[in-house]
Image 1: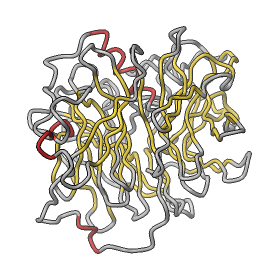
Image 2: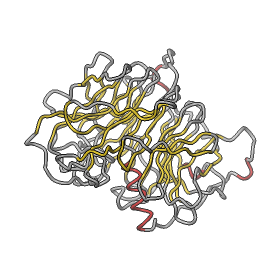
Image 3: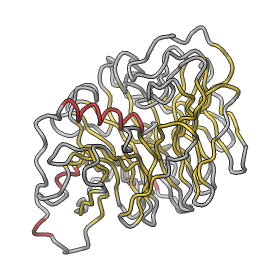
Length: 430
């Protein structure tokens, strides 16, 4: 979530309002390009700039931008390696993401999840300056989380401490084997700046996933034994770091983490300028997880999932407290069918019910929402390709008769499509 600074407080933030607003209707733009088997829109600003990832001609993945429907590849030369992905963008056109370098990781930790054995770093991109790699804490790898309008970037970076508690095996999301500790950091706003954020007392590692314009940061805290880096990151404690660096446990929905199940962690992904947080938390029994909403007034609220689904995550929130993410039909993204949702004022709605029935995509996951209510993510075409989408709120009264129950949910994704979806979700970095 990237937005201008808001100074207006809102008692209890309307989170428990009994008068739910009627969800907006949306028109859908397939960001394509036609014939590409995989593109993903990961983030957008309030001015129409979208960032994400697309499959290149050689099969690698590149960070890309869309503006006015035109896609631009910013992944070459990138940081010198074959793969990269754009994450989110702030109001000043600064894009962050992750990219491989041409340097071999001496420990083959597969921090990015590409299985190439190359070093993985977080980057900042700005038009005219290209990609700039962000520093580590003395280790080999680093990963992005979020950026604010001050130019501060949240993420996490390896240090040089070899931790015997690290499992030393490949994680359920395909990253690893992990050998070194990693810590939550803030980069910037000046070039070369890096500030380490401490984990909770008793924990040894942490990951920062989001930052607002006040410098408040959210993420997860744990140990190297129970915290998984990369896409579908996992950890046992959702946390918030105040602007002074103090860390607070946000609680949970009854469980903590299950490193044997993909994405089954308690993680705070994004914080808006009102201090409201969304993410996901494992339920009692550590087998399923739900999206949550947290504020100082209410604590952690379970947002539930769409009817018939079992797991889900809150992946973005704007300054109107609208949450978007994915609701999945089975207990784990590797086996379930995802569908994008919008949550607002106590009601979760399948985004596919808010778009025209003849839309070019069935919407699988929503990754970001801006303050105008525009949403980006990815969906599946009738041909089975996975493409990034832009969902734009329809003008009042415009096309109302065509906006009915939306496209039908696929009975099941093909195995190839499922692998693409999983790799794309992993590239989200969160």
